[in-house]
Each structure stands twice: as structure tokens, then as C-alpha cells.
Length: 192
Image (cartoon, rainbow, N blue to C red; front, side, top):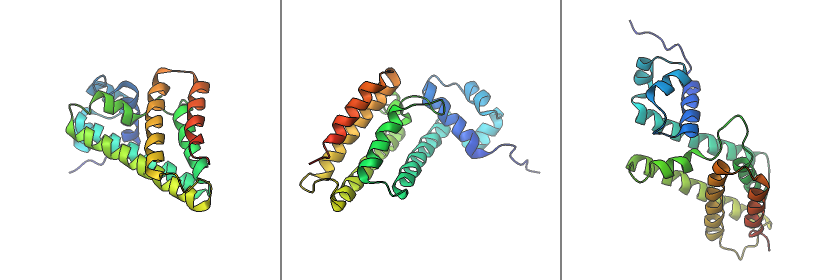
């Protein structure tokens, strides 16, 4: 007879995601995961596979959360610049709900050079983020908020690069005022 799961799979996946985000892949032991997730080792293996498989699932979940959050902001009828400002503010204004920095950036610097699967996921995540920015900039150009003579792809690449840099600073710095100044300078590129 098969036992039913005694835990919410998504809830424990989020706990694992936060632990990997905070400590990194290498510094997170299997025992750390078992303890933090509140599941038995056997349940972890049965549900998520090995540590690497669990990590890959957390990166995928992270991407889904970011996409949902941006979609929600767009759905609120915000302008393109307001959504871009939200993205900057979200990565700068860290609170107790999440560790500082970004799971993608942390994983890129820790694993991407030696783990092709993680590298592919991280690159896809960065590409997705840049595509969202291109779409937002084009939306702003259509509404007249952003000048049409500016190349949306170049602007998006520049904004994305700044966002990646700020994600690193968010992990290493507490000078939020400076980070907001950097964000302001980047957003100013969108003006006429």
C-alpha cells in the first residue's frame, strides 16, 4: 500500500529554494535540506530525486515566481516604466521574506561554469528577463512613454546588465540609496 505524502510539495520546494538561495548549492547539505524542509530523507528522494534534481526544480520554481510577479504588475495596468521601476525596486528592497541577491545570479557565479544543465537554465532565465524588458520597452514605445528612435533590444540588454549587477550588490552591500541612484540612471535611458 502506497503512503500518501504528509507534506505540501510546493511548500517544501519553496523552503528548499530559499535555502539554496541563501547558502548556495555547495554549502547546502542534504541534512540541511531535510531539516529545513521538514521532510524525511526518503521522502525528499522519492519526491524530488537527488540534491541536484531538487536544485534544478527550485531554479525552475524561481523562474515561475518571477514571471508571475511581472505578469501581475503588468496586469495592474502599470506603464512600462512603472513595471521596470518595480523590477529594480524588488531586487534592491530585500525583506525578511527572501534572501538578498538573486538565485539566478548566485547560481550563475557558483555553478554555471561546471554544470551545463544549470548554465542552460540560468542563460534561459536571463534571456527571458531580457525578452520581458524588450516587450515592456516596445509597449512603452507604442504608448509614447519611451521614444521610438531608441533600440528596444539594446535598451533591454543594458537594463538587464544593470539589474544583474544590482543583484550582486544587493547581496554584498547595504547601501540601498546608491543602488536606487544606479537604477534611476538606468531608467533615465528610457527618456527622450
